[in-house]
Image (tube, rainbow, N blue to C red; front, side):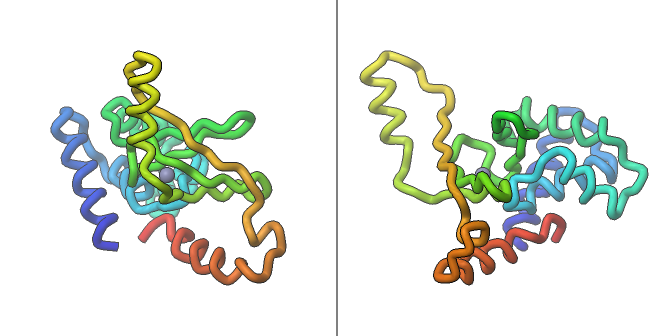
Length: 164
Ligand SMILES: [Zn+2]
């Protein structure tokens, strides 16, 4: 979990640079955000933080998220009809694979979209600020696809640890 530790420290020092007081509860929110590959919702972050800090308020989670989002350090993934999900590991626009059955959200490493952005900018004269590439489908687990199930389980297991 070395990478997560680095990201946690990075976020905490950035918050301090902004003059934000990093209480243990706020640090716990950062910890969940920076170490989770699961793209947790506010409720999931809240539940994880309360394991160690039962007195944490939902407002603390919202406030910490809002500050990090303003700083461009957390990527908010809005999904119609559902609560937003958050990525504190990769704060910039990146493609996601979303299971419409279980709601699992996975980062997708596909051909760089930067080139496409440049093309769009050139063709339209727009200054592209961000982009969305979301792929919706049914994951092998939900589809009962035994051939790909093992793979999905390995991925899911690695992602299940919200808190290291
Ligand atoms: Zn992501």
